[in-house]
Image (cartoon, rainbow, N blue to C red; front, side, top):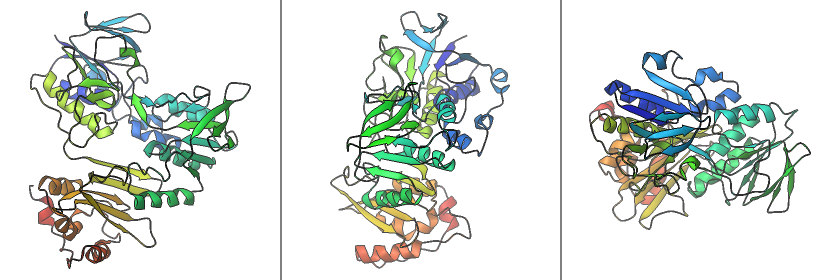
Length: 448
């Protein structure tokens, strides 16, 4: 019986294991040093905030794995011997395989800061990170202040978590405006204001220089490139992530920043594959990055590779880009591509609308010559993925999208709707005379 060995029990590895089992009777083993069972990584913040217990983050009961004949091994893989088709664990044990899948995810970036390995310095990625947060920042009495280094989604999540326990937070962001390498200026500015509303000490255009230690080897303060020394008990490193592949450096598997793979998620070594955050496409797919540390793409890779391993070779095709998140109280969605001013393409133009009083806005990207719809960011308005995915596939123009914006609105029945206000500004800016089309349920649910 063919043995498929999966290193990593995150969303990619577990999705792969589940789908191989649906399609075959192959022997499946999952090795992980992090936890005994798969858990939802995106739910870690809610455990710390008291909304759920850690066991609630496990989508499957403990008996699920034995029933589905998925063997779980708690251990750390320290070396891969591709010539002998076996992996070596840190305890000296070996596991042989017929097919090997590397799904080891990411780890927080460290840039050689003095003190970056002190106690109380951590990211927010693993179960161990959650445990350390409870240890070093259990409450405002034991943690007088926390400093978070690096903007973006993980940084804002950590800030929200700490503020839920009334721990003062200083947020060091190297950009001149929050996440302005990703967000257009109007959206970035709105998030700056929202962070301040939550009594977070946001310091823009500021870099970490050094982390100072106390007599016990724990972080006691950070020094910035502005010459400020900020006392703190916890330092959150959230300046992005990098593939967790150090154990492969002496193997024959080709690596760059991540494990190099083709469209079939195959490495340069026969019967060795990589999926999820640690996989790096030889050539980027469209506007996507070669490495995508995104939950849903990891799941897609697992589903795709299961087909290939089970005899139905399938290319990884993630489709149109989309994502969603929360910036404290503001829900964020993006479909297609809306680049920041810094990264905007030559042909790309933006239409931006912001509510005069509430933290609600949209930015729509379009081709300046053809008016083709390229993408949309929404803050504070829930939208239907199915509609924007369809309009991007159909290559609709921006006029069509603006007229049919009501079809995409997914807010509950008694929520306020803003399409009329949005199109008033659109007509003014674009010198058009469009009107919002009446919502059509037939358009929403008919086949694309």
